[in-house]
Amino acid sequence: MDGSLVISGPESPWFNMAADETLLQLAHDYGRLVLRLYRWDRPAVSFGYFQSYDAIANLTPVRPLVRRLTGGGLVSHVADWTYSLALPAEHRWYQLKARESYQWVHQWVDRSLQSLGLATSLAARPMSDGPGQCFLGAEQDDVLLRGAKVAGAAQRRTRSGLLIQGSIQIPGSMIQTHRQAWEVAMRSSAPDIVWSELKLDGALREAIERLATSKYAAEAFLKRR
Image 1 (cartoon, rainbow, N blue to C red):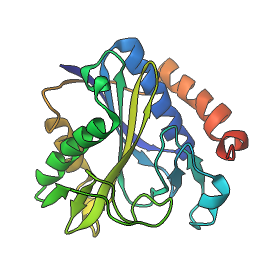
Image 2 (image 1 turned 30 degrees about the vertical axis):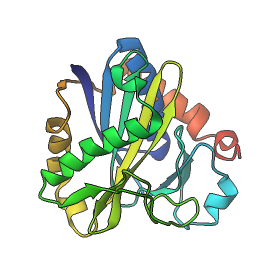
Image 3 (image 1 turned 180 degrees about the vertical axis):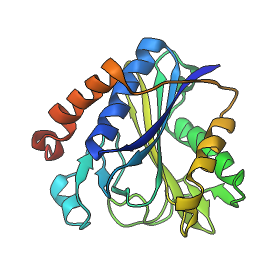
Image 4 (image 1 turned 45 degrees about the vertical axis):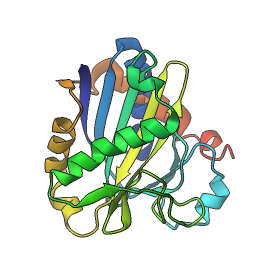
C-alpha cells in the first residue's frame, strides 16, 4: 500500500489546520493515504468543530485558540507531538465505523510509542474527564501510560474522505528529546505502507496559506459557535 508522508517544521496554528484540511482534499485527488507529522510555532489550543468558542475561552488562558475541522475537545499544543491522517473515500480503512477507525489509528500510535520503550496500552473503557477537555480523562481506545491518557484523536468524515487529527503528550523531558525518534517510529509502525515524501511548497503551500487566512484565522470561523 502506498502513502504520502509530510514532515512539517513549526507552522502557525492557522496554517496547521488549513494544511490538514487541504491534505484531506489531496488524499481524495491522489487516491492515497496522507500522513502528516507536524509542529507548532507557538503555544496554542485547538478545539473541536462543534464546540463553543466562549466555553473554550473560559477553560484556558493559552492563546491563540484555533478551531479544528474535526470534532473532539480542547487540546493544548504547548508540548506535544501532533499528526494528521487523511484517507480517500475509496480507501478500505474509510469503510470502518468511527469506533473502529479510532481504535485502528491508536493501535498504530501505540506501536510507535512502545518501540520507544514506553509501556503504553489502549484504554479498555472511558475514564471521567473535565467537560470539553480532551486530556482530562480518556475515551475507550485512547492511549494510556501508567493509567493516564497520553494520546487522543478527533475525526471528521466527509463524502470524499476521512481526516484524523491526533496529539501525543508524554510527561517529562521525552517530549523534547525524542521527537525525531517518534517520527521514525510512526513511519516504521505503519501497517504495510510504502512511503513517498510530500513537501508543502510551491502552489500547494500557497493554497494552504490562502485557506489559513480566509478561514482558520478569520473570526467568523473561530467564533462560529
